[in-house]
Length: 514
Image 1 (cartoon, rainbow, N blue to C red):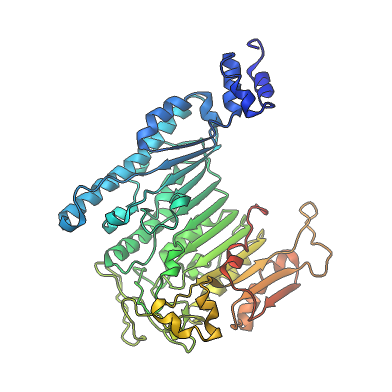
Image 2 (cartoon, rainbow, N blue to C red):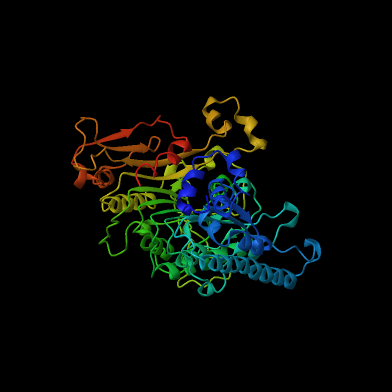
């Protein structure tokens, strides 16, 4: 067997079952290599910083080429002092120690992978997941300790073995309130060092927390992201960027005032830089606080998204300026403006003296307190920008723009409405959504012609309750796909249609088209 080429031995081993592969481990070096390759024992690996030396020893050589999934779990330092006796200086020292420790863990991982790549490493075949640490409820940290920032990103080595990147909590931790979140620009800094990645999935932090300190971090984080993103574009084919988790919608108080996240001007630099960053993607799923400038620049010329085929935008009901995309059923809260964040210097301080009354804190939810009706002053410009931009996506096959709607009466009031069937949907705790979807007709990719079925036309699905767009906005939407598929289309608008969020989350299939 030793006289046969390794490729032939590998071919023989590839036809054996796993129990039979174990019998080959001690027969010869070539058979051992083949048995290890096809045993799947070296395709997945999970480690922490303490395991890096063992990992490097184990995967040096051919085994590194067999690795397909690598999960790297970040860990926080233990608290030196309990919460009740910590001073402000102690908090600052803890935040600094954790920031340096978390960043050093990522640097050590990249150094380790670089060492392995030097020995004939693979090219873009490893899916790397860097997962954030969980914090026990009894160890709630100060706000700065919640963020994972990458310090000195320029010192990271370039890695060619990574083909996909995930940043965020471990899937088993998703329901926890207590895990650190990655800084907004972490995904940008890492992707620059991973030229071979084809997809990126990142859960980043940009959520309202009723805390001035966190809001300050958010404002500066969005500006920092905008500066970093304006001169680069993602070279991946697919991206899923979640700046807002499900809890950002579940725990949102529609009576509360929201912070102003824009330092100057009327448009959001974060949104416009995100547009430039994503324009070469093939597939994009986005959950974020954005305004119209994500879709359409201020110069009104627009730009072509040449490759995008699948687009899902889940927008937060609050705008970057702190106003709302929705209002109450009788127009409540229509003109509410965002408040300036304490400690943030704005180019101009807005005057909200004439705006609606703002209720700070979290008042008990009331049936009249939910924002269900589109605010024409804010939502229509966003939808118009989406439609104009989508019309400049020549390869677009599916698109969805939507916002979740969460109902929570609270135990203290839910019993008062149990007799009223009109509130059944709230008592059922179903999560809903408001949005508009587009699906292109099936096309013969070889000939480029649309199918002959009369019903095989562009489809627009309006899951907007009893709200119906005006003719001008409809016309903008109907321009999507017109140049490629012709003038025929179908509008599906039914005030009683299913609006459960599963419809919206499952609308864009992505994988089938990309």
